[in-house]
Image (cartoon, rainbow, N blue to C red; front, side, top):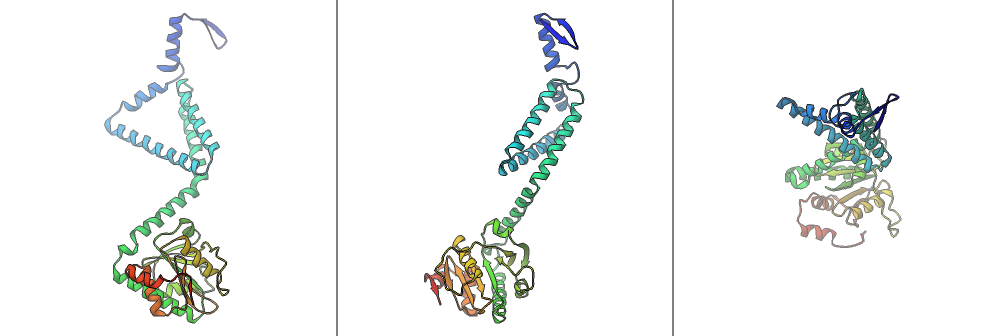
Length: 313
């Protein structure tokens, strides 16, 4: 059999040809160390070095798992094909004894890592952001706090609503322990203790956060200036503005949540829960509703408040 190498024809027997393949592709390359040699040397080391190398492999595997995860999430199939193709070329080249393969591999891996950072940095930040929201809701849910803290939060909300009502300052407050990440992402994270002064400051017309909703979980103002889904119900009182429509929309979309609205035109305080509405609320009525929202009241009390359907004027 003839094998041409650098323009020279070499006649090999069948046995010599097998030996040639073994040397060229499997054991010792004519031009460098093959993958089999590299793997053998990689694991033949001291135990502490072996542990370090295994951790390195796991770390690299985790990185590429997230690369493929976010690529699939963003539907970047072309990027996945390119990465897989480059890794396959590197793997195949290791059997061919390509000179300076380690240098080329480092460059390729660096390019892949840099491209992943460019493509998926926002996705990673968003997921970390959402994870922090979920952790906050889990650790600061009403059931995880003492009744004294929740009663204090209720008092601060009532005080703020009464002051905002007197000055006819519009306000939209959601009390919930479960809401979509997209709603929270649309606003500004605060994660602050509830106080009447804070709520009044947020809804002051000249502040940057007044246009939107405040999301409250237990004793924390989680976010402000959040945008909410509007109800599609057209059979609403004429005086209902955007805040009222958003409050009804969020109560429909997230059953169990309670939304408080202060009208900027009339100062009327209203509450929405599961698509139902209570209007013209005084301090005592508002306290009963907030106690239910904070899970300070039993089911019977909640049914006595929200038992009527439709609108109560």
